[in-house]
Length: 81
Length: 135
Image 1 (cartoon, chains in turn blue, red):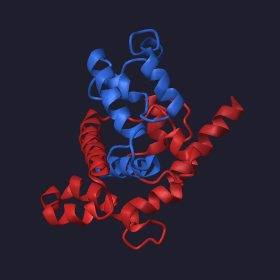
Image 2 (cartoon, one colour):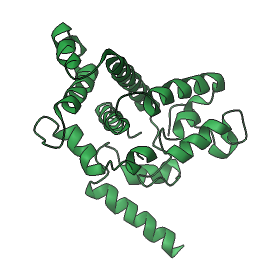
Image 3 (cartoon, helix red, strand yellow):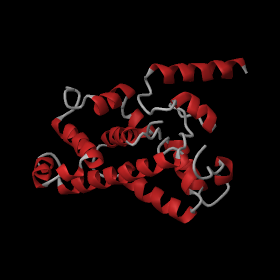
């Protein structure tokens, strides 16, 4: 069981984070759990998604290299995410 | 689950595993890619080793614009994965991008994070497919 409540994805799709959750479903990264956990604070979840998504999905460094690094750091932290 | 754009660009699970476990010895990565993977590994485990000499080496492969992007991305993810690990949840996506319950996700990913190509993950995915077909 997660250590804080995991919000329901259908409920998130009806709230102010709907557009961001849809992006997770379309782009497959980050996992929608990003908002299911942080959505308890919607404005923070939105701001973090925008910041993280900007550095992940845009920029001048190879997106595929960043994806390898994302998985590398996930495993290093024993996170399945 | 992996980024759809990265997969569309040809990134495979084999390359991800190679990049994590064998980047030093692999011929599949350029010197620039290898130092980015080293940067990430050091940031997670030995940040004190990222000194002026390391940034000089990094600077021979990347512009300062690229270094800032790489460093910010790595910093974000060191923090995120550490935080998310403590929350003790499983991905909502299967490795194939299907939304599943926490119970199902735990069955698929197991207790130890690792390659999506490992046998226990593949077996759990096959079992989930069989259950779906039978249902």
